[in-house]
Image (cartoon, rainbow, N blue to C red; front, side, top):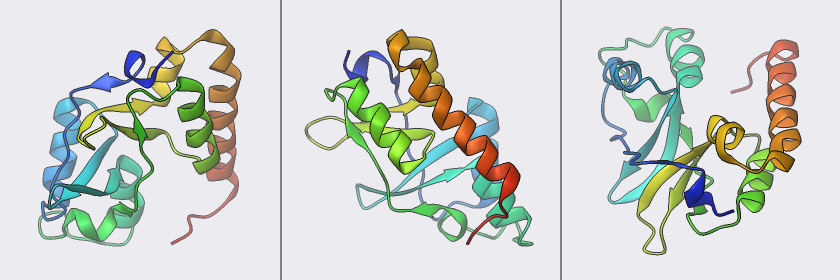
Length: 148
């Protein structure tokens, strides 16, 4: 199975210069938990609902003036839409990430691959890998304070 067969298509990115309030509204309106961040036609990071809460809100950032760039996770792990789903799942597990942008060969974003996508659409033999990633992440967040 290829990544394109499991991913959520039609993902869009946001500018690093929009406010945290705008980011939160976009996430709420689209019912999603993360947004890729792009600048000058390149992906530069991801911002998650956790970033908003832990790097924004908990640090006292003003959501109406603080920009996405301030709280986003810099750097990006991505995959190609024609990568094997097993390789993409392994990469997500190694990086301990829940969402991964999907690119075509022209390096244009065509979608997002999430743990939810894997749980719903990936071959059943990958379920154990997905479950381990979720369980490891849940125990890490419960046991450790947030690192900066």
